[in-house]
Image (spheres, helix red, strand yellow):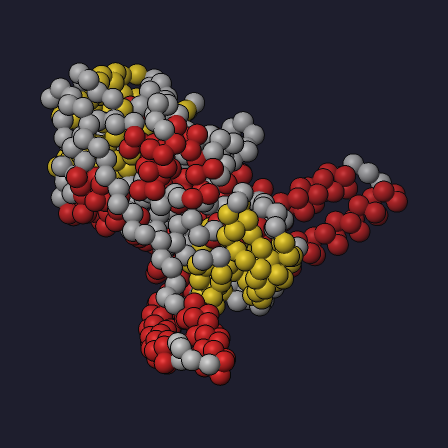
Length: 535
């Protein structure tokens, strides 16, 4: 069970949630929805204890598991495989170690010490068996397979995993550990269709309470029985699935609009009546005052029935870039490995001015690593990357590593255009919906969607003519994805793109595709979309 009592959530000068009380019952499955920047991630952080409430209290079960939105940098010992790391997440692993210790002790001791060791082992073994300890390895592998980590990935050192694989491993560890409350922020990021279905089924069947932030409509329609809508610092609760919520909200807003119209007509009628008493004696003056009080009351009611304030639609456009030579990028024999783990080898391709190249491959195939080598953020083991004449590279990193967490949003943008005025910077941020007090907020406190928008704003003002984009739609709401799509469709430079969003890719229709790790270059075909995990 989860309870909020008069909870108030603030970031800097922004109030993300006014005093709110909320009860989520044990076993209930709840989706938290709202536009980017409304405060969903910060609310989850507040519930999980990562962010301090400005007022009020929150109570959660002792066994609460929290999946953060950002892809984790897993803390693993040297050479530890993904499977070894996953098993460490289970509360049964320390018990298994203790049983092994006691087994060794029983073979080397006698007398009272032996009797004590036998008693301890027997008690621990009974609990271990009852909790499914002997199925631990099989359960871990089943969960890993469910979220999309195959046998090769489980045997890969944690340090060599891609961002998507680390995200899946983090999710698998959380599900293996279990708990009475799961707090999940965008749990289906990086998951393909089959993995999403598996997670939906798991969440639907678990006895735990589940609170999820997601832009995945199928997830929210299949596994949840209540929707909390966070908007304008308030939470409205809707019973049913996400589709039920959309329908109920539309009906509620239509009803509010009708009521507001009726109240407005009555207020206008009273204004006309008040004019009749505009002149006259004290009795008329008293009637005017009485009518004005009724009009004021109606105006206050009008506020309650006014349509919810919607954030303005994003209008993003990349400025016209400087012209490059015909050949923008040539890659020859590029190879990269981490220790014994070979990521890709002998990659060859060329890009001409105005091309759009899509990198396709399963998680761990080397897409992000290749982009980082192209941007000179990592050094390849072999091969060469040659930029053409007058090429300026702009790199969008899916983990937002270029954003300075302790600097303000304005200062982060100012780093890309030092000579710009604050007004000009705020104008750019406004195009991405980062308005008002958000501009002076520490960038590290932004939601994932807001960080994506800030990173895209920095990319836009840099006026690069070669964009290297690594999962630019992650954490964006559908309206923001549409805005980014339109911007890239009108962009006159050259693009190398990694994306798991098949709908997004389909509408961009890149000219060519590079398949990894095979390093096979082919022309775009709609059939290739079947190789891309659906958003």
